[in-house]
Image (cartoon, rainbow, N blue to C red):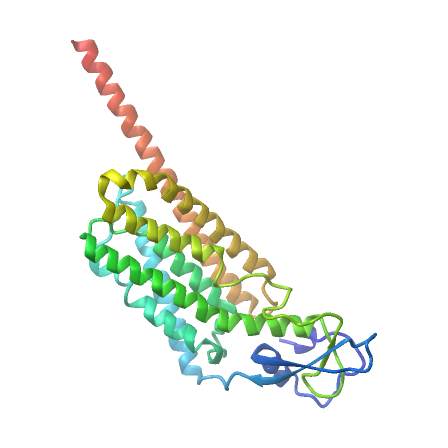
Length: 323
């Protein structure tokens, strides 16, 4: 990629500066310092990067995370297709396969570990670009598969651990993407002052996460999915008497969660920084495929339900005519 495409046009850029190093400094900076300036008209805010994340891990680490992500996605895709082929909306899913889902007790801790070290996973599979797609895959997995056949204690423990894992993953993801988005804003909405490689002049204050991209891992989407999982626990342990009061709210929140996930996916596809374009399109294209399959599954479930009701009405009508 030609890094000059990232740099604003101004005469203070020094030809001897290393473009790759500037790129790494801006996108991995975790501490931007503001300095006083005498030119309050042309440079009211003067910033420079004071501290960056450590160097990237070896290429092997990126490759392992890439393989893990592909495996998690394929497991989710296969189980969604199996679920669609199971007829009237029943989960065609044995316990051993459930644990392999992205929101399961095996994959989710590994995802959290990858996000916790994600600032240094930035070679062939940068989590600053692909991390949001991985979190969306976890949220889709948590929403799509609900094993209500478990006993109350086991079900509660499993779902509560999923809630905790999702919240931790979203926080760790923000620790990756917020410096990335901040650096992107600093690079695209500023001009180099020429005093150092990361010294920039701005007309407005630089805020955490920047103002060019609004996506956050710790967002309304995450909280709605967490709310759905909590309502599932309430419905499970409260029994039939109290569960009916929450079923409508739970169903409404599930549908709104799917809408929010779709909006996030489309937004990130269209508005993410223009690097690793093909990788990003493939990642979010895969997420959109999962969403599309979920819509088809719901449509098939409604069709099966309507056909079942029609068959019952036909049987009752035939019985009455016979009598």
